[in-house]
Structures are given as structure tokens and as C-alpha cells.
Image (cartoon, rainbow, N blue to C red):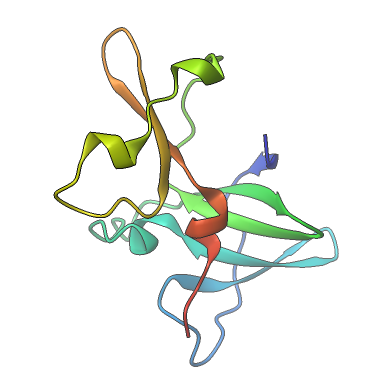
Length: 122
């Protein structure tokens, strides 16, 4: 519900001494937007150098933040009541950036907690 728009890759200006998850700043029609790399934020392997990410621009209060993702897939309409709490699913490890899990026909769909994902510690 927080997605403002999805756009192709935009050139970024790197920010010296910024946390590694902050890939830089983008100019989105005159608005300066921080770009957070979800691969780095979720501690996944680095994106191949020949692959440009997509920008998923989300609205956080009065600010826009870009989440850099590998690709955009299908849009699913799911019932909120079917959302499984990830904290109930695993007591072995803390789930900090996943808000919930939906069981789809052939896979699981993880729902990111966008507020936690964009929190960046210096």
C-alpha cells in the first residue's frame, strides 16, 4: 500500500561515509530520494555488475525512499486475514524485516516491513 511508483534504474550520486545499504541519492523529478539496496539490506549476495536494479519508490510519512530490487513480478491480491505472523513461524531466529507470510498455491510470499527495511543505522 506504500508503493508510489516503479521506475527503471536511475543514475545515483554516492554519499560519502553512508552505510553500505544506502547506494546513493536519485533525482526523481526534482525530489531527492535515498536509494536503499534490498540485496545489501537483507544480506543477500551482491547483484551482478551487468544487471541494473529497478526502483520501487515507497512513501514513508512525508518522504519518498527508493528500494532497489532485481525485478518486478506479478501483483497479488491477498486477504489480510490469511497473513501468517513470522514470529510464530520461527523461534530459532529473529524475524526483523518480514511482516508476514502468505501461503500461495505454489510458493510462499514474504511481506516486507517497509519501515524496518528502510531504517538505516549509521
